[in-house]
Length: 408
Ligand SMILES: [Zn+2]
Image (cartoon, rainbow, N blue to C red; front, side):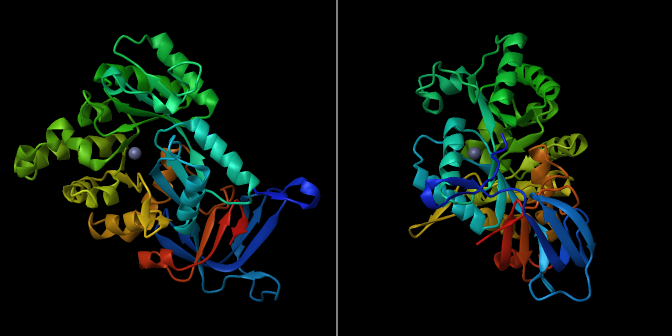
């Protein structure tokens, strides 16, 4: 579901005035960061109408005093966090507002919700809209798992709903019929979910049935790297388009200390390489989630991600969770990008692609998000310096536009 960003202002007399559309803005004389090609297009003027980029042209020599002059600045697409969680029953509206603000502070304008109670995401969006607060666009998932995952567990993400299963959360088994799978994929889509989060206790045989149905109905098949009993290679071979968490590539065995001692043996490196090469061949995207590994003593995940990168796997930037810094909530997104460069050995252009074009591809919005081009959404960052030279540029922002409107 695309949670469309609108700002509703409570006007005098309590009337609600919708001010999202019908607005135009022109950003003069800026250097466009072409993330796809890893280069700067200098001296361009970008016109935006109704939240969409309508024209990109060579800048005029003279800029009038009241025009938005970004001479010397760098314009890049808003960032996409490919792994977040929004709809959790413990989250208060204040928590979600703080979380939204923390992502916006990092320049994140779009997020993928990797499973949760989508009712809460919808409610949250309505709350934020009514308060003139900005938030990233949220693309939601329907969360699927088998009986071993759900067994004995209270289903928090569907509580209060008319049935135990819901369009955003389904228990399936090896005997779930093809007809039922198709029915619940359609339900997820109608409810607004962009993809399925295939999580746990799903077999390879079931994945092979689910993925083609996803493609048939235009729903993205997303999953964990290993969906025990399905292994990482099973998940890739079944055609899951995006796999999350590099650290899960070893399956359950990877959590034992015996395995940790041999995980960089030649045999293990070759085993991983065969999976990474298959991913590169199929175009499977790896949502690596490095920051969360580094803070949980799983530094090996950065080395694995470097192996994937060198094998030609497309890597996305996802954080999984927010952090507290003192009493302030903090998005981990810019930290994640630094780690992809510094600990995983990715080039800066590839890190910027992980944060833009690759993220857009995951949610089925390639060409519309994560790029600056005619027809794309005008989620834009204005930076003081060139991010292709240093990722520090992302921390020195001049302005942020959401749907073509400047956010303060
Ligand atoms: Zn997660």
